[in-house]
Image (cartoon, rainbow, N blue to C red; front, side, top):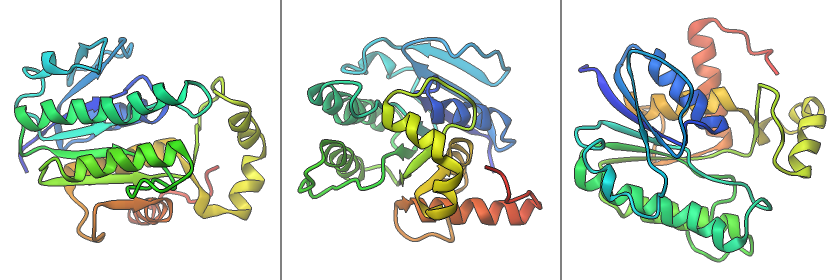
Length: 236
């Protein structure tokens, strides 16, 4: 396989940061472009950084997005941290605008999208987050990319300590061991999620039909990777 050219959007975020690091370590990836509003603070021979302050207009990204094979899109925000209008702008408008320019510049690129548990493309959900993630999913599937991979994680365990964005996330972090034991299919490690998002778009998913990966599907892929490499499954 020819070395792949990968774009990571949102690389300063929790999942995007792991996606960036894993893409740079992946031998199948020859070059990685990180696009975001601030620097990632990493030096690597595969890495090229593009600072883009306003995702409402991605026209200026046409050149750096030319000739790309894969986009891993992790840009997002948390419910309760921004207004509902801002939530829709970030979740839907930014995704659609970036996809527009990527599709024009690299029409054969694969698109890996960080959605969320309960995303509703029908628009009938009472939860704004679910409606907006669903709206973004629907737009991506209609954009014309040859391959779209949609990931719907439930609770994403941060792995590394961080300042949690809301009280509910602080609570989940505190009870995570018990929550994981009781509801294993409702949790996923951030690093595991990132790896699956990168691998799917770079290598394809021959053992998974359809573009949508629910949390249980992501966990199943992680388990198969651990089995193949002999890694331990007892991690938190």
